[in-house]
Image 1 (cartoon, helix red, strand yellow):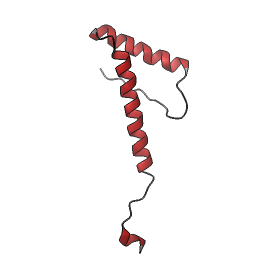
Image 2: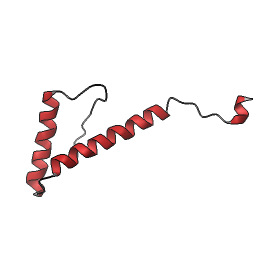
Image 3: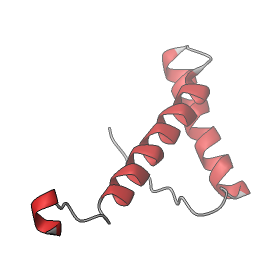
Image 4: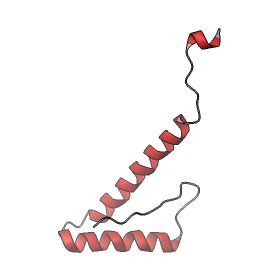
Length: 70
């Protein structure tokens, strides 16, 4: 089952957010038996946030060619 989770990229995650993510990681570890699942979860979230930031930054630039500038 997939559950959507949002993550803000301005500032740090508060205690409640960290507790929530840690609980998710702990539950994944319990179901899979892999003790590094919490670390993997945080790594995946970090990569997703970075990808989103890259898309957001690239979206603010207009695509122009040298011909358009002349």
